[in-house]
Image: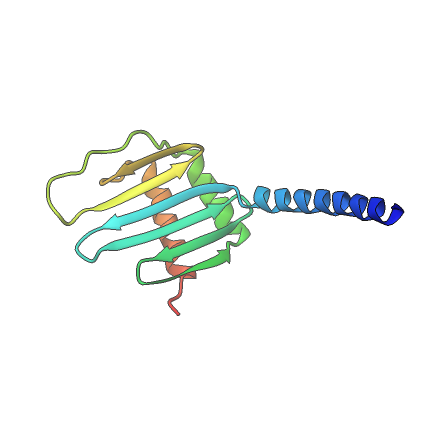
Length: 138
């Protein structure tokens, strides 16, 4: 009988430690900012997701996703650009076929634009440079 009670206690203690570990991993994966670029004649579909811990997930239509971590300088520059970002509202799709849609998500706001507002340009360009630098096809 005591073995059953000991086993039950161990399961409870082990389960509690697993839950706290899972919560710690989830907390590290909080999204700071996300960019998605879609469209154009080439069928662009690029994504850059930057997490608050400084790591990124990069993906393109033409290959597998990659995970990397940014340097301290890259994170400081991105955070500086983000301080000026105003997500605003989505923009209606313009007539025609060769347009790239930029979708930004930041601090609970998400919007899609076909022309880049002034506060978007530094953020989008920085995220595009990160994608170019760290994403490599396999």
